[in-house]
Length: 394
Ligand code: CTP
Image (cartoon, rainbow, N blue to C red; front, side, top):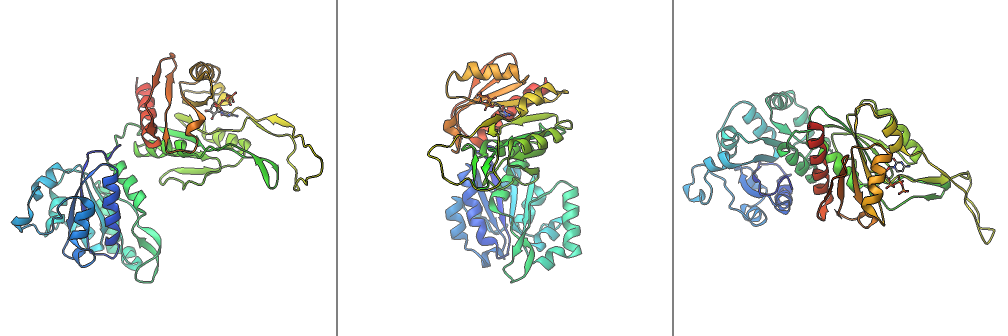
């Protein structure tokens, strides 16, 4: 959503990770951005302009003085009209040039002339990356507002192990979105819970639900992009922890309650997207329960209602709950909003549990309902946060 219709100059410099820029261009296009590819002379040694042109669906610009190349968009247009410049991979050379104010080719000239945010995704040999000159250049650029993502650690093309791999492409996309997102949650401390909980019957069996955690993770990422400091308390989920946040892994409702309560006093906004088990087995067997009797009864006891507790202990926090309903959605959600002393509740149905898309209704303190259309969870997260921002700002 954030990248929709955005004009992105994608600068590719001469490193082996240049081949990954093809996939990056494709991902930008998939996110509905317009890509203006620019290659340095060295980049052409690694991938062909034709490949890039094909995936980027746009002419590749290489030479500042080749008039024939300035077809659709001139380099001045690129600098002035770009919403964002992404340099991926960024070599030590291009970082050094920009840090020193050198503009001797098309890419560095665009970077020097643009007022758009510039994001570097460095990729190089780890010794090169550790070099004090490179570190100093990065530091200098960071200080004056240039953004960096990565590099990641791992096996490098030169055979070394270490820090220098191009950041994962989804992190580069996420960082690009962060560059463009409004910083309307700056100064807020947002606590998010996500995923299911598991309540053990014995060492190999548990009671749980099919929540994937996708909605809560999307909210945590979106809040961070919008400038908040984020703590994500997650139940068991196969999703990778989002970057740039404090991540706390929990399993049971009790552990989730403990972690949430611990971070509650210092939070300004709390969003309980977790599908917490309401019951747990009264006895959790230490050894595997063997099949003996024809029938087995498991006695269950209530877990703590974390959100209700948060409502009772509220000290100015803005509290958002979710309501998972199979019937009478709005009536039940409104009841929960009151009973748990919430500021906002997001009503949804179990149909969106594991999917990429969700359809929710958001109800505010005064009972006003807004039914959102069916949206990708990332987009729904942004819309829910829009509501939070409007409410805490007023
Ligand atoms: N919740 C919680 N602790 C629980 C159960 C739920 O904090 N033990 C939170 C959920 O994270 C959600 C909200 O309360 O934000 C509503 O959860 P939901 O499962 O819809 O409802 P319940 O309160 O559990 O009530 P019921 O199961 O009867 O619908």
